[in-house]
Length: 248
Image (cartoon, rainbow, N blue to C red; front, side, top):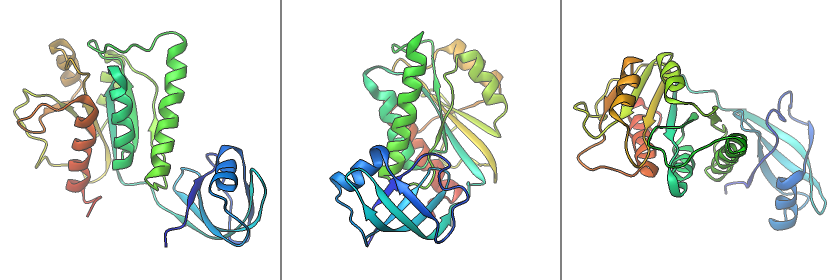
């Protein structure tokens, strides 16, 4: 039977070992004790998003917290080939849908992009507010999909800043409906970082595409159909995960 898994604060399991005592409190503690009604004697898993997962026995349960004894720890190492989704901001929450599904599909990092044709705009206080929201969505999606690692959400980038970021990747790909090269069958590096760029609902402008390709990005297409921005990235990431052997 799969044990219930809860998330603690990032880094909370650093230094933990069998027989270490921990406390699960805050929102997760209230959910575990008050909603899930976890009680003393039961076993749970506790993750902090870093790849560490602790199998624990509940020694005591309060109204909003659990006292835990660590039985064993398992570390899932960071993959040697990391996949990142560059998601253009999109209207109607479709960018957040892409983030959520991509996290469930195993993306390692997410980069919000303020594309020229993005209807949604992050400006002023919205930048920090929406950055926190994306981090929360990634964390909740990682929890739901029982991932030991939470993807990193990088700062919002303009097209110029994105081009500089892509130049440092081992492989940068741009999904584009007019690209001649298919994503399926593409050779991937054995290790390093692969970044996948997905435009907004209005598509990537020609000048933007020129900027990204000048930075080394390779235009690729998924297939004959044109997908929404909310589905294109997660579907492409699934193809990459299968091709790399991550889903083998």
